[in-house]
Length: 214
Image (cartoon, rainbow, N blue to C red; front, side, top):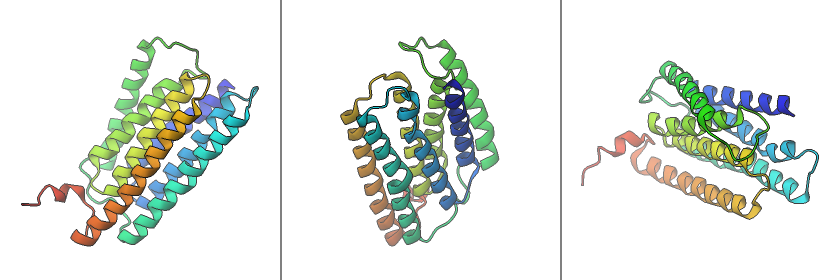
């Protein structure tokens, strides 16, 4: 099981670096969809010897929302906005990857200092969860397009979800589903907001909104 968990964590790190180095928004959406689908399998993989009905339901809900519903909403929004790339971000793509490596090293160091209340399936889960949260936050603050910032929000939630799955032995299903509902509403509202911003200002560069005068 440790080998499977380690493989998933390494895959998660690679997807985070891919997002840091990509400019094509459609590809970024697909990467986040794949990331969410893989994370949806974690509850089943971590409880392979004791799979209960609520875990199956929970995994199906996660995979459906993270792997299909959220990406579909974002692709539809992207099509309506008629934009394909993140152009001239605040932090360049090469620099973003370099900073990502530094952030990963810091997360590995921080996780080695933590005393966890329960044993985890892999020693990489906690640092990778931290790295995923920080990668999402970095996407939010370093990119101009509202679509990329929404993706950063989803990546942050993926990191929080990974951390929760690693440390909670019994899934609090209703709490997790409540969080998913909040994320669903946030993505839906952000999609509507981006559509109206693009209709009124012919762009979705959030940095230009600060130039508006009363």
